Image (cartoon, rainbow over all chains, first blue to last red; front, side):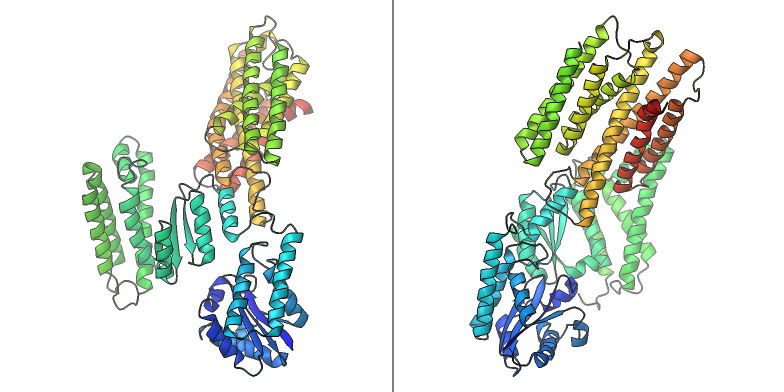
Length: 365
Length: 261
């Protein structure tokens, strides 16, 4: 009986490919794999950085084809790359090499952050799932038991786990190396898995100002966002030009004009422009550049939204730009005079509603 | 009088050693002690300057060793000022050791007595303003050096958890910015008063000496750097490299030219 391992990790495949293979019920998949006559035992190690199938077989060459096919058709639910394309993104180990690889993975030597402790638990989970599915026989059981013992030895006899290490910890260390304080920063975390949760805890503990969680399934992001007082977003939202435009207007309403500490006079462009007019024409010119820049951004996002089919074909983006811009300035002037949050909300929400009406209703999402 | 300078030098040395120890352990309490040592050193040096100034045979401020001691003292004060707002433990050892060497050297050398033409208010204004500018720009140069080291470490992904905690890139960039904002006008005033002092002595505002020529080149380089930085044509890394190169020119104009000639 030979051990064969087929897998992909953070070094061989980009995250958007890896995530196609994440999720799904493990046990039915393993039972399906074991139904193939070439496969005797099987286990699936699935983490955010790796997906690996470990099997035992009497026919390694035939098993290789089965594994590629299974990877492509079953693990990715039919949406993954073809078996041929997968060869460039995966690694295949046999016999001694496969055993050695499992030992390295369990010992966290093969991890993105060497020494991170989570991987051992994830390998144990993989073993438990295989055992519960009844697809883990004597060879794989012995392999995993030896891998756990090896991981323990590596941990105890080397300095690999002397300091608490994790992707989350590294993310915080990196952020602190770049930024003096995290209080006034916001972070966008993509995904809603264990690593993101651990990163949120670490960033929250270090006083991160604002948290945004984007995930392909917004519901998962929402539950995390609720726990960490963040905001949840769908992944498509990040790419959507009209989504960006809407966010821009919301920020203008919620965070810019109402930020009395930093902008006590309302819209800084309007205030400067009024104060500098006639007295400092060259400075007024600089402020005008800001106006032009904002207007250009609005126009660009509208053009992109129209090109992407998010806005109706008949929308005149130049005219809408002027209208939105005038509306924003009007809202800021009214707010600057009366300091009435209700009036500001009303004016800006009208602009957001108007933008909504321009959307192409035939476009899904 | 010189004993106060020796005391200041001793305090600077102790502060530098404590800072190295505090960073290596790392021990925040020892680092705090190092900052206090640095502040006490600055107080002792201030007292030393006051004493020297009151002497009948006051040493010349234009003496290079003495001017460097003033520069180091102002650099220490500038660092202490910045430390009120930013965490800058990595700056303490180099500045403390430079201050130690400068103060100890000035005390040991017993600076030459002021000549008549070097004792006027223009001479004092020139030395004090130029020294203050140099001190601030020196801190900008040091921040630039740290920024480049830190940036290189980050880009090479060698070691994320730092054994020696240099300040964050954001803090280093802020130091660079503040130091340029303060240092360049002071340096400009120093150059201007130097020209006026020269005019009073020789009747010419520029005689073409090596020191004047290099100082003018260094000033022009800084003028260009400041214009590029604040016009938004420079990123933080370019600004850091520029601050380092600019200070090298400036150092050559002040110290290097003296050694060469």
